[in-house]
Length: 458
Image 1: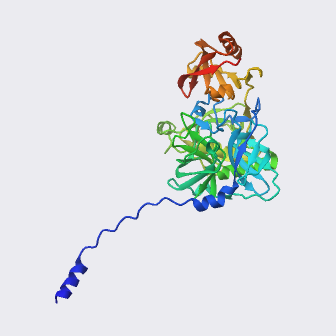
Image 2: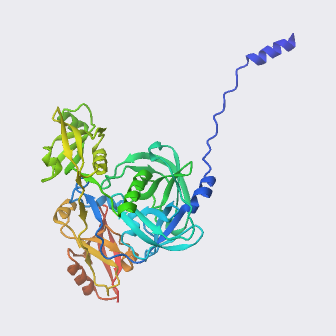
Image 3: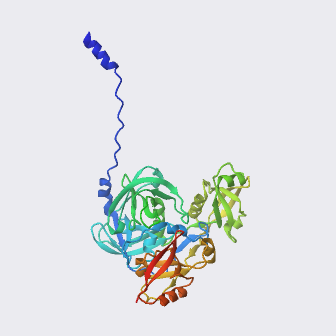
């Protein structure tokens, strides 16, 4: 009887609370073992003095946009003062086709690719696309090369584990891991790319390298970091691999990328604007300007129209419309649904080919001055926006200039307290200081000002 009671007591006792399973980070060793062989390191020679690469289409950017965000969104460069090390890339075809970033190879000569087995090959640039920051290069390897497996970035979810393989600071095939922070990020001046945001540690040299999911598939191309210093600060961005592969396909076929345009400038629809435009919600892209002699003008599109569907696809925001327009085939005609101050309308618009805006030639200091510095004057509207009277924008900084801490995008305001607004004035201030002396450059970077010491060459 006592045994039975004891048994009943045991059976009636409350069950111990279940222990939560311990969190375990994923193991990336198999991924690295299988995929690292297809990751390559890129190095290159000197900068090309002038690049005629298109910067942006007028639909995506204000043509007077100063590019201030590029002072924060630093693209990755190599570690050495002469910039011999460029970054990373990965093989997408055993025949030797490699995807990397356009900013790594667009202004370089004598590009070389180093494979995981230490073989090195001279690379030929098949084509570059500055708007997506994707380039396709080709090497002639005697044997079939290992290639990556391509994944589907549309299946990525915030919180999912991802890993990067690249060459930060020249350390080849370094592996870092983290999670997807967000998807479909739109960055100012980068409207053509729905970026993948991660917290994967990426640094100078990772640019152009692959971002992998846990299945070992490439889902992105590491391209941009958000930084006030030029180094990793916990936020990085990758170009979705489907965007990169589409660009690579067009570059391989014709050496260029064709995009559509309709000729409008756009704005995000805020809650206040939605009320003003008599919209049910904030979906859509508001037209703030219709360019003259554009397809949009021919179709009678007006400022204040809010485009909500393009070619049958919903338009969530202005970035959606930019990407949908860019993907449209020039010469085709699409139906656009819009709301004009509360009234729904449908228009048919012919798609034109996007006209690229070309970078103006920089003012180059004489070659016998080993400063490695190229400067361009600031446009009037940019000076007004920055609230400065003069200044020179740094287009390229290498050799002595890079060692002094100058970076592309910096604005030089003065030399030893003397304001400068032209290359001639800059030269004059260096000459006045004398050869072998050190001058103080007042530099504006990302809205902040600092002095940088620059030694004048003998």
